[in-house]
Image 1 (tube, rainbow, N blue to C red):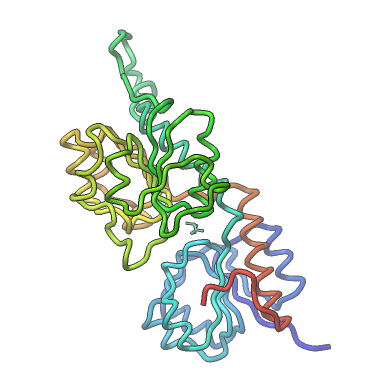
Image 2: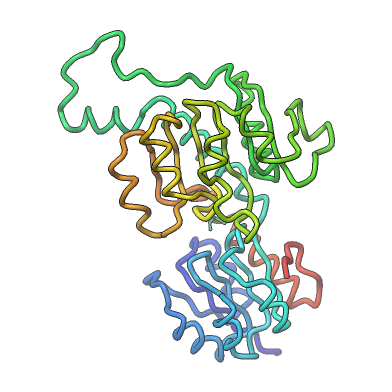
Length: 321
Ligand code: DGY
């Protein structure tokens, strides 16, 4: 019998994923779900043929340069791959895959939740009731912004952006979008295309970010771009914290340029930006866009599909490097 490849699953994944992995691989698990240091990752790399990490494990140029040559593939349990230096990994001949598609609907749901919560002041309302401070009601009490019939701008019309556009159909919004390439009409579903983010922003009562974090999109929403939004606009981010200049966002929320923001992702994770907690008009979640039981199974299985293909000598379906 040939030996099974040794697979290191860096974090505690769904029971179904770990059970399936154990069938086909000699698996090293992390039942305590501890986050490993760079030195530990490097030490472990000499013992494994494949790594199945999450976005919490950082494969930057320095780490990649020192990975043991035994590692042949990094099969990410994430769609985002900004924690991986793809050029460095390619340079080392290490195959990299991600898990697209399977988390689009779950992430779109969280974008909708953030948009509604930010627009309708759900965080403030919840805090008030919990604190026992809800002692009056008036017609001008806790007024928010209505989503229905407004204009929504989507930055990045990939899988998640399209899933989000589909999800909000019932709100009768006018949808505008920016994408590197214009979508064919059947995928556009009536959304209005803009060739640049700068062209898009003046048309957005709400703007939702769905593009990957790359050197080009770092601080995409900076002070200049936030200024292009109509007064009282609402920003939603379920993609990556790196896309937003957080100081500029705080200034826009304080000045009233933006009515509110809904964020699931932050420049510093875990933890977020403590300055955000001072603002009432920001609704935050701890990076849970894809955190449903169904989606975690699907992500785990997709990562294993990629590994299976690789070890069968085939091209993994979601190869990104
Ligand atoms: C992703 O898949 O990129 C999500 O942010 C979770 O890692």
